[in-house]
Length: 284
Image (cartoon, rainbow, N blue to C red; front, side, top):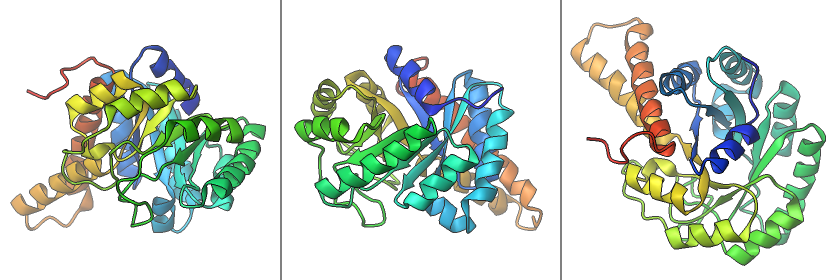
């Protein structure tokens, strides 16, 4: 199946008043698991590679090309997206490799500098038919770079979208990156106000900390693209711990990475069904 554009998946979800699941890839098993989970659900999915993951691997090309190859072999529509890129050079590299969408994150800069940098990056990406997400109103928990408690102002969001020409906007509404518990409290009234203020899809970062029922409510209030990373990593690591705890003599990584991959696939299937309103919002 040809690689799908993130914009196609997100806009189709918004038309259905559903959410589009976007899940972060750390290594090849993550990419395989996310696609397997999407295939089991029969739903599209977005694979994301963050700048932190690129730094972990040493460069974008190896993990990026592997992820693109996995996406192209999927039985459901799959997009590949560069997540939280603060480096313009990394964005340009992703575009050259064949990524169909990027998130350029200049949210730590003062507002006017964020606008200028994001506008320049959006011009470059649109020239190559690449969809652009940006962030306004810093989401907490990202290695201390974002201030917890900050919220996105709807009027500023409207001006930011108009000034930059971006295709989607990540907003701060109460979630936080890297949460290990699922008890984040979202400001759903603010989500609704932001949805009214801008005509581009809204993106929820830090969704691992949001319980199923509130993910559904966030989508109903106006959120569309929903990013998940830590929740999958918990499932992956938990499966590895369980296997090694029960099989202390294991030395072949495939013996514990296989169950970890399965655990991630099951989590992805469930979350995609929640976002598509095709499963109960609370697991029974």
